Picture 1 (cartoon, rainbow, N blue to C red):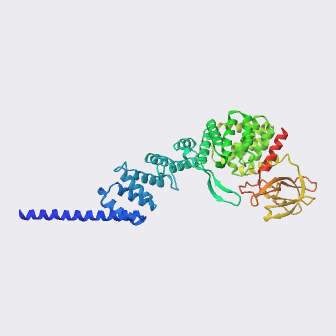
Picture 2: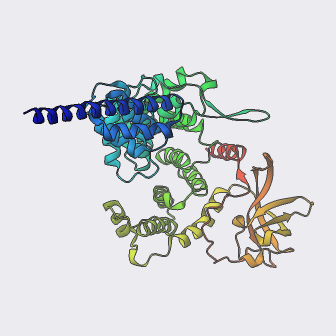
Picture 3: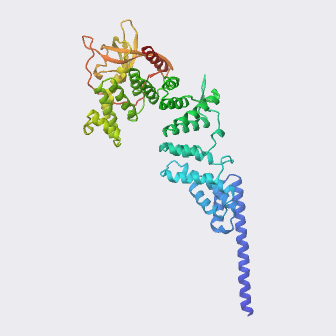
Length: 494
């Protein structure tokens, strides 16, 4: 009996000593972990927190869980931080510090990561973040999460959901001062404030969801209540108002609003919608000039299908059926190349114009052909000047033409309506002269466009070569002054 009692006492003593040693080890790790964390040495803090979390998990309280997850986050070990948070949150569901770290881990892994594969997972994680945090809480990822979700939804063109997510934050609380990007010699370059950017995003989404009246009201309130110095760009808001008037049939107000910005901005959608105003007023010639101008703006021509269909309608009204058909062929060729299905509207056009969709030329070739048509229509009101090529630069990509009076004008190959072989010194040509701006010097110059080679009888040499589509940036961009001249021409013709 004494022997058994002695053995039992030895076991008890062993467990007491072992427990004391374990408690000492636990405390030692905890002290070290907290010490390293407080001094910003998160790498070494993680080593001790790891020992605590894996060997003494049952003794770890909410502060250990928070410290471990925070240190992991600081060292960009976001997956592991998320794992620790998910293990701990059920044990400590009301600990605000842990909830905040958990929210950031969710954001870093499932919402803000560079490679997002599944939008559904993003939205589910984002909703969880919004449950864990509050918009006005310090260091909260709430607002950043909403903004990131909106960005992702925009990329996937989920416009209806964009509106819902914007409404999850108080836009009025967002910063209203433009963000300074660069201080230049004569001016300060800024980007829109978060307030302005969010309103613009919401307006765009409302317009795409055909809620134009709501978009116009928001735009009008912004323009009326925001000081001028805090507005980065009025154009998107002016467009929302103009667009609503167009869609609601108030053509006079639509015209007034479009005139405030359309001629200053080289955006094909603006010119197309202003052309729609003229079209609905049965002023087809003015509509044609603006629509052709829009076709010549920079950008991927394959995104301009609605514009080409609209031009087909204009040419049909002007009884120029062959050119109308060519525009429809371009629109249909693009849809076919992008593997878009043909809706009933497209099928009706195919039947009406007897288009063989199985034998359509490449859209690039049709685009090249029509580019010459648009240029001729755009500048049809301008006089022709006759001279010759006096200098060729950059292996024929640009050069200068001259008149008998000695005046010379720069031109680019994109504005040469002839075979490249005719770009040579001494070649007789005719051309239009327009005002353009040199972006490198920020200075307006007169340049030559529609440069056409002439034969010995001063007649245009037939040009059958289809020019390739080009998305390169031209050296000269047509500026606001030229667009204003076009506007005056339209007004005079009326």
